[in-house]
Image 1 (cartoon, one colour):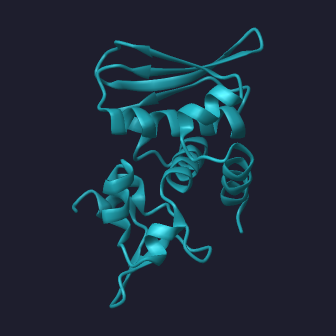
Image 2: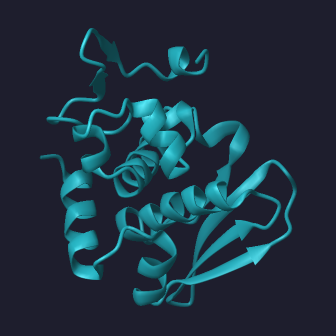
Image 3: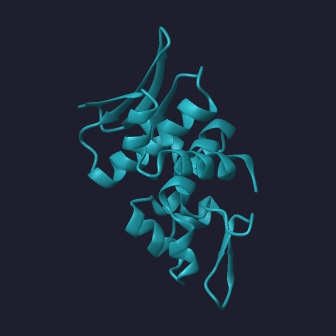
Length: 163
């Protein structure tokens, strides 16, 4: 099991939820909603030992939840790095920090049970409010691909945009 998946499992077990807003609250991370430019979904900020997640109010509730999970990942995995979450760059970023945050958010928001019940990754992502562009980051048996009982689809973010 990789480190991110292990962190997510430990955190959801400890907090008894996969809701990023409840987890942030219980970790004393302040979540703020602000109207921001449409290119900015949100960001994580550490200021004088206080941790903040700022989320764009213009976003749908589902996208706010995903952004909160993504920024929560930064608070946990990269606590001293202030990282803006820009829609134009982050969802498709090859940058290690952003990819880790996206993987964390996907692991947190898409329960394994949905996939074990036969739902495909893109349907599960839709139900859980996870953008299709990052859905393939979900790990199943430690691999970043999904089987639909007839074929395997490799996790290729450039191909997932065409779905």
